[in-house]
Length: 320
Ligand code: SF4
Image 1 (spheres, rainbow, N blue to C red):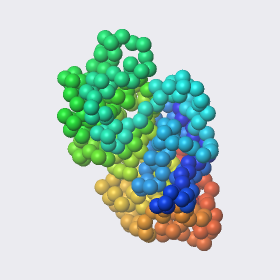
Image 2: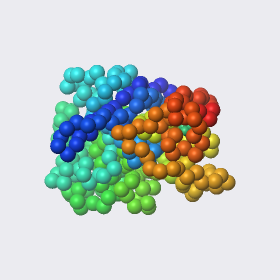
Image 3: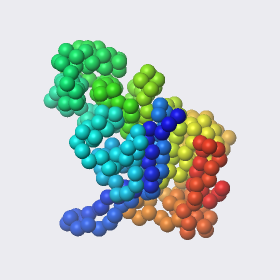
């Protein structure tokens, strides 16, 4: 399979300001990050809140600036796109689904208008052709055509997320970023939405970057998983490799905190020390050393290099 997305040495920083608007610190949210996503796969990024996963999603969507590095989509460096038409083409192929469908749907527009708008802006289709596509897409996500005449507030959270998914599909994209798409939903509804995303992936050969802090959801949907900690990928592998043979102490700790996954029942729970450090004060050496139960002297001094366990499974840790 060829890579649809290739991220090389990506750095994303932002500045924090004091109460009086004085610039005080540079926060490194994404650090020299490398990641490939193959056409047709679901790659998930897992990690605690504040680890940089949503910042990475926004950088790939060009919603925020990246300081350096390259992001190739379909072999084109999207950070170098300048012309309106190039950027418009990119947004036809790449779409994002957010955590809160209510805030991403205009409350003053009917669902039919919300779904028609991208087609009116980006194509020369007739009104009838647009209507037909909109009706197809709304039934594709399991809603009736009557939904098109209603406003977002007239739907439940799960239905609104179905509408957001329909809107993400309206221009027939190749790649979808799903940023915590089920975190705001009841557990019973979460499974329905995840199943819908899996069906759509199969049907249209879509590629997904799926972001979640919930490892049970990630286990169910992912082909590959990347574990992120303070702006870096610390472990990456096939879903089975990560769940059956986790290598990085951070991955082990995340898995051991979810006993129902059934992969760590014979292993002891790994307690993480303290909270996730602020990205304003990144630790030297291995960024995980302040919380790692296996930290050694070298961990405080040197960031580990990548160790490969197979063609697909690798991690950054001085234990290997
Ligand atoms: Fe822990 Fe050291 Fe490995 Fe970092 S490099 S995860 S501190 S053992």
